[in-house]
Length: 221
Image 1 (cartoon, rainbow, N blue to C red):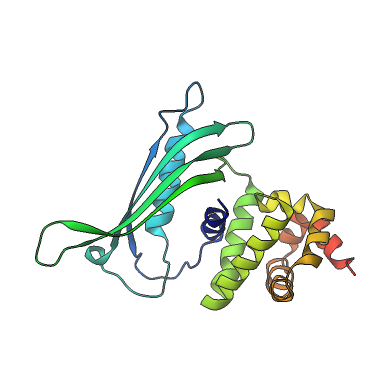
Image 2 (tube, rainbow, N blue to C red):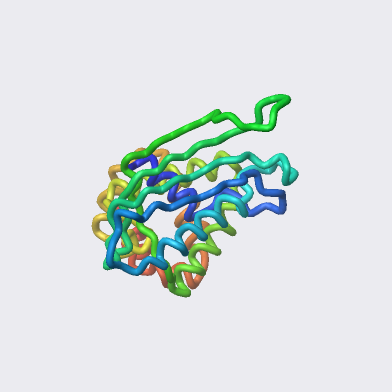
């Protein structure tokens, strides 16, 4: 679950939005047969969102032609869905395949199964959430690859320590945020200070969204 939470952070922020061809040709399927009596359109929008994210995102600065894209599949089996808090619990089978030389079929070169694929997905988001996502991408795109990885890892560690599932929950957990920030490794604290507080929150609207969190941070010892 924690490994997937880290992956979802990468998904939320995006590692790149460069003007290069996308690298993946990913087919996403969602099995919701175990879910009954709920709004099933959320699964359709979830499948579309994941598909667009995987295939339209540039993950590296390498240029790929359409026929060079890496073929992969994400098979998600949803075992529990709570509409009240937009939470999902299930399993994920992720596989990557490549053509076999001098043949017309593919072979699997990587396969990963996560039996605790638990996450939060909200079908409709607020204007603040859209702005937050856009601003974060802009800031992160200006970072080096290594700084991007370090920032996401440090933010993941902070979210994990506070028990928050989203940045909104983090913003509403002021005291827990400060107490857990102190407990983080020095490297994590330095990265969060230099990137999150000095760059991400160096924006009037972002400071408004995270206003109380920003004030608590500035009052820390």
